[in-house]
Amino acid sequence: MKVCIIGNSLTSLALAKALINNEIFVNIFYTNKKLHHNKTRTIGLSKSNIDYFNKHILDINKILWPIKKIKIFSENSGHKEIIKFEDQNSSLFSIMQNHKIYSRLISELYKSKYFKLRKYTNINNLNKSKYDLLINCDYNHELTKKYFSKKFEKKYYSFALTTIINHKKLESNNFATQVFTNKGPLAFLPMSNSRTSIVYSLREGNNNVDIKKIISKFNFNYKIKSINEISKFKLKSLNLRSYYNGNILAFGDLLHKLHPLAGQGFNMSIRDIKNLLEIIDNKIKLGLPLDQNVCSEFEKKTRSKNFIFSEGIDFIYECFNTENKIRNSFIDTTVKYIGRNKVINKYFKKVADLGLQI
Image (cartoon, rainbow, N blue to C red; front, side, top):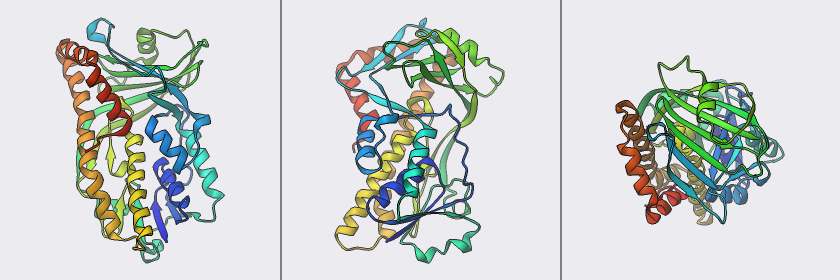
């Protein structure tokens, strides 16, 4: 059995590793071999996805930093904590740097006889008939324009700034902080006892904001020594209307994009990998081919859940965005009340870890 993956994103590599671990031949076609993975970008990975990654893809424990508590604040509430999530027994999620997991994956893939990385030139050199499945992870690819142009898309008219602060070493730096400022959500995501990642989402019109001043204003925990290079990227929400065409399956960021405030984008992709591999494994056990039916079953199993989950993240963003516009703390008060309810608090932690179970 042979699968073609188009694009060499982080999701592409993780999917390829999961497939070759099941002795399925994989060719990755790339248009840009040396993707730029700057060292200021980080990923938050949930407990269940870490367990799956370690067992079915690659052991990543050595590059993870556990987060045991999340504190959420709002500028409108006078910098008072409005909600808290914590787990005294284990971590809620863990942080890792994009470039580290990318390097680990590509290194392991090159060792396998089941893997080849190939240069994409045009649709003719793809030779689609050679593959049981074609999985497209490239948003800008010509197959995307041909088969996957219909989508639900929302522009936030926002962008994110990311950087890393180096600070005085703490005895324990295992709690993340999210501050809903009047300009947008600001996240402090620990990477070690002396380094913390920053993600600041801003609406357009704030291009001249001084992120160093913002970090200083809302920094409640660190004695900062230095701030690394600042990177910038645009934000939008996206969900495809149709997940496949024949035996060509859309995947990764091509399927769905989320606002980064909840750190769920890559987690959704890992859950997609898990669902796809379960379908493929069942086909192999039954002696059935990997064909269009795999794509159809995957769409049926995941599309509704992914869409509802995406809309939930968007709803949270819009709630705080509306509050910031009207300078009212009603939503803060409501969230604080909900956060004190142990049942609801536990449910939110479960959804963040496992996704929607419907």
